[in-house]
Image (tube, rainbow, N blue to C red):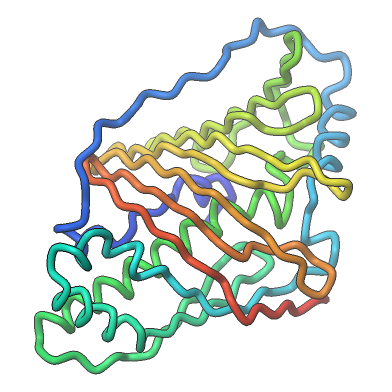
Length: 281
């Protein structure tokens, strides 16, 4: 699977099991500045500097990140504790037994495993299966989006055919990947990406990342993203806040705060990454 296809697989999470807790919200349109194109006399030089501006775990020997993912179940259940305390207590007792183990490799591929919790009936088992699937989709989608900004850099290799335009305080880079996947990146003069568009025959997606400017390079601190499947699926909008911690000398995610809108349905989840360990090359 190409790097750009992975950009577009973004986080449809936990919606099937949490119907009573989901609020319907309208999608808000996002816009980004459109610069007046000017030819760059040195596109390769600019891209080399841009690639060097990012933290880039791969260049620091990252091989894989292992941790346990712990959702904030009480936050996810929302007002259920007030409106139906018995149901809240039953759900929390069940969720307390769930364990998610995650391994993320150097390609940003996340492998999520879980224990099987004994449930009182078939309906509860079906619900737990959906929770397992939802967490898998959420974490897989997050790391696929996080990967190009933190494990590598978001830019094509400098040798690839590129269209680079400069205008004022912005630089826009465009190229075409395999299968006619078109990538369009807008960045500021510090090389921080402010907008990334990926268009293909199957999907359209836009990511709006925000970075912390640390001494060792740009670190992805949050992003919003829109994804539209051209086959007719619902539009997805996500907003993700990321906290980090240093482990074995490398900065890796420690907490996620994620809001997802799928169509008109909305959900919010907090997830902590605990007992983290890093394998290096």
